[in-house]
Image 1 (tube, helix red, strand yellow):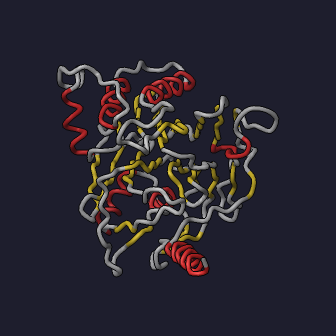
Image 2 (tube, helix red, strand yellow):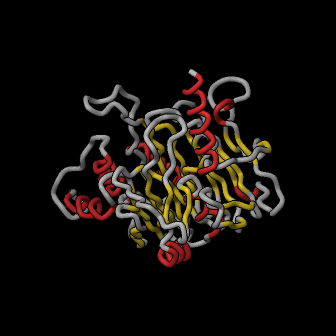
Image 3 (cartoon, rainbow, N blue to C red):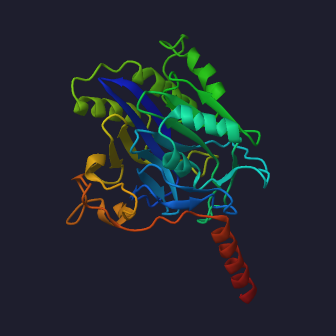
Length: 344
């Protein structure tokens, strides 16, 4: 589920495309997160910080962020990885609830090098959370990139972070783990092997197709050409609406896709269930400390008809607070469910 593609040679711009694939609606809205927000690790509150950089993020259920770009030109994306194993992070170490994992990086880092150094130095532990909607619990890995074209993938398969850091790492999908994807893609014609480009929706095949096509994009003459080219690649890696295949009851489909311009600080969003593309220019947003958090209500205003968003929506955000899912909230929900069961 999901594909991320980096294109650092987009005619003077560094562009990133990302598909969000999931089996059910994530009720995604866009959020403006200013500098100066006080946050904690959503575990026991031992790790606290004040956001150093403002960001634009795409949320999931309004309790976490799944994709985003900060004002320093640093992008981050959470994708599914079934092999994820977060272990049991020690209480004395640095920990982050998975709900705030990506946001911590957007709040604190301007470059991939900074993020990688902190990750490896702290050996940060990720604390998983229960899915409050009743579906599978999130099993995720993180892709990050910056406006220099640097890139890294962070995965947990043995309880500790495994970091893959290189400007050559342009593509990321899902299973298997990233090291195996790098080996498999060498079998494809034009990428080191002689096998034809595969066409299924499996993560390995999407990795191969995206890797092939992004390396063959022509240098764009304009920003518009660059954005269009990136959309063409991630649409090729998208998953169509369909009935689940036998034995795969939770088949994913592409819900939305985004293109991030890390150089010109623009965030472009396209829903697969609405005809209108919307975008946000950072120069038109207020990221100053003390400015309010703001929400673009895509759930209720992105589609057809009067009141639907289209084009530049930088001025359409309204004040709203994004509350991240935490262990405290999880405990409260569990207690309420237990009380209800006992009453029944």
